[in-house]
Amino acid sequence: MFAGKISIIGAGLGGLVLARVLYMRGIEAEIYELDASAAARNQGGMLDLHEESGQRALEMAGLTEEFRRHILRGGDAMRVLDKAGLIRYEHEGDGTRPEIERGDLRAILLASFPSHLIHCGATVTDIISVGGGRHEVTVTSGYSFTTDLLIGADGAWSRVRPVTSDAKPAYFGISFVETHLKKADQEYPEAGRLVGQGSMFALSDEKGLIAHRETSGDIRVYIALKADELWVSSGEIDFEDSTSAKAALLGHFAGWNDALRALIADGDEFVPRRIHALPVGHRWDRIAGVTLIGDAAHLMSHFAGKGANQAMLDGAELGQAIVANPADIEAAPASYEKAMFPRSAAHAGASASNLTVAFEPDAPRGFLDLMMSYQQ
Image (cartoon, rainbow, N blue to C red):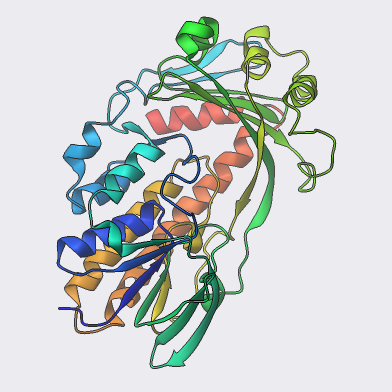
């Protein structure tokens, strides 16, 4: 049995899968989460879980049956449109990559081990090596603890990453603005028909409208634009004023099909998000007593659907490595990193390439070629 203290920073999907896999084998890792509670904020939209990664991780965590009860039937359908609203590619969905709301998936994981193992409202403020691979961690309340294995599962702006690497996420040149259409089939039936049963990508002129169904019946919309990193905060659009934000965003899509523009016009509020990524192939030299998983290790763009899936697989594989090497604190992270580095590099490269293709001037041509290559 592993006798040391394992501390996971971050209660995202990767960290929770890791904690679950360890708990199943009698190892209680403690999680430190910056949010005040599990329900402190919206957890994001739908996730398609891939058989070789996200689904595999849930199987290793013994949660496949529970996951299957929450999937959106037909949610893996996808269509690609041009700015005239013409469907250029359509996949009806075959169930191999089932969709689930991120919040539902997180709730399943949170319920799979004792709640006393999660310390909420605990933002890391300092990490000090105290020798022998052990680290002293201080959180916002001023509370400090010393741990034998420190795992950074704390996302894009990880507080643990600087212990291992100087790498920082870089802006990818694309900004998203998120909005919602509530009860779409009842209130906005044309939008419901346009989006279909799963997700929709409308791409052209180096911009896009990306939408997907949610189990609630809402449609989540991402308005994607090539923009300077400071565009969001430049004052060009007042995102606090939904009416003026809507008008300004519609101006970026002049000449687009009216039904597509309605995805903006019928939105309820507009939340900007910049797209960042770590360098493809990000890795670090082995640091005793610490490692990273998920976005903390390999933050990538959204355009291959790999980020959450890889985070979950990271957590499951690291957990199994710890279980397999309970007497050797260094064997587990070393073996995990050896497999994770090339795996994550390949997926990060594909994600970066896909995002570039999606926002070429002749889009959706390259994106259509990409979809056809996947189908073949």
